[in-house]
View 1 (cartoon, one colour):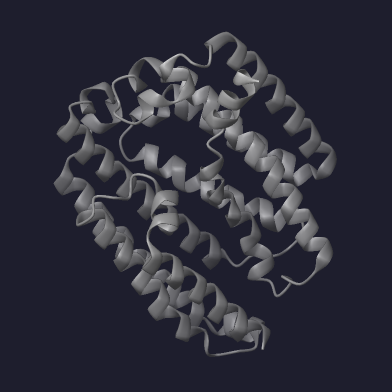
View 2 (cartoon, helix red, strand yellow; view 1 turned 60 degrees about the vertical axis):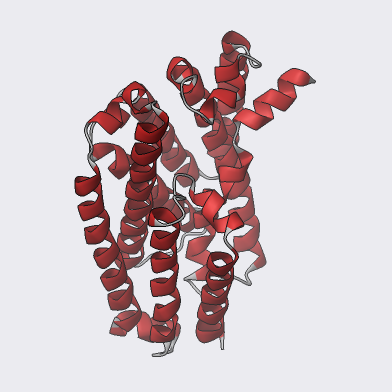
Length: 292
């Protein structure tokens, strides 16, 4: 029972909020009320969450000797020793194989994309996360793959602009995460244990964040003003959602630079009421405009 409890904790269930990107295609395709599409998306969300969760377990196993020097990660079951490496590795690999097999029978497209995600993140865990810039690109690609899954399982065509906005937004979140890791690492004295952080500096990351912030906002504005998108949604009023996007990004920057949050995106979403309300309002206004 203790093993299962620590294993479930290692799955980082709270971070499964990232997998909600799987629902983006049915929201942006005017099929959010389609029961079959919703069912497929829920199944894909659960399967992918199990897959991604077990990748977290494998990553914790690989990083366990470094995590013991991190003020928060040292309390993770594997780093703390409450979850033994060999049983965790065997059980996690077993569950991962089951989830991928279920994904294969569920939807071949899902299986291929999920397998690509597993391979990329395994390579990320053992080496790629040590390569500056490339590491945050891998994080961003992971979000794009989530959106691709949402489209593939329901055979939904997705605008290239949706992929661009998703990639840039995820790149923004990844850079903010690196910035906060660098700040807290230097403050608490554990940054030397992370090779990836040695390749960054605050001026560099701040400049990259400025670039991705601008690129994300411009891409979203182009998306909602695109005549093809307006014709598809039968409305020219999508520009009304722009203020919510601007506020969300600005608020996230405020929480990063002033409140020193941002290392964990899910923490920002659940802990900051203004950000959460703005997110709900953005989704609500967008849905009203495209479904009216």
